[in-house]
Length: 158
Ligand code: ZN
Image 1 (cartoon, rainbow, N blue to C red):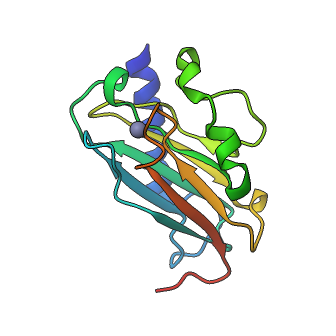
Image 2: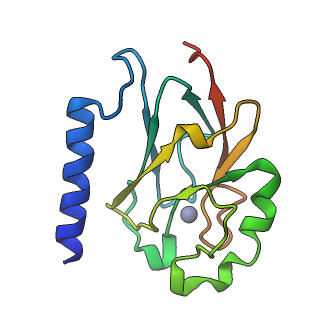
């Protein structure tokens, strides 16, 4: 069942990549892939979202081998000023994969382990210009090493 769900999820993502979901022009990249590993790190510390995108897809890949029980990663988005409150006490939220019910969480992927991936679509019209956003992994003790900033840009810098 889990496999089927993942398969369908991947299928949707693949179709989106093929036909570029949304109304963005071909030149606009409305998706980003972040690769994480077994060393509590990932390869992107900053994401810029083009305002021309109606939806922006974040795909978190876990290129490591360790299980999510010991080296789980997720991608959680919040406003910069909300981050510490959102991140506080997440270690107690194991039952919900370290995500607590909090309206300040704008978007989040699933918690994944080695060899897995999870995608989330961010509605770009929910993001405000000039507002700084942060993303982080909410697995206990990972936030210090796994975080980054996300900003809305009018035109993507080359
Ligand atoms: Zn993590």
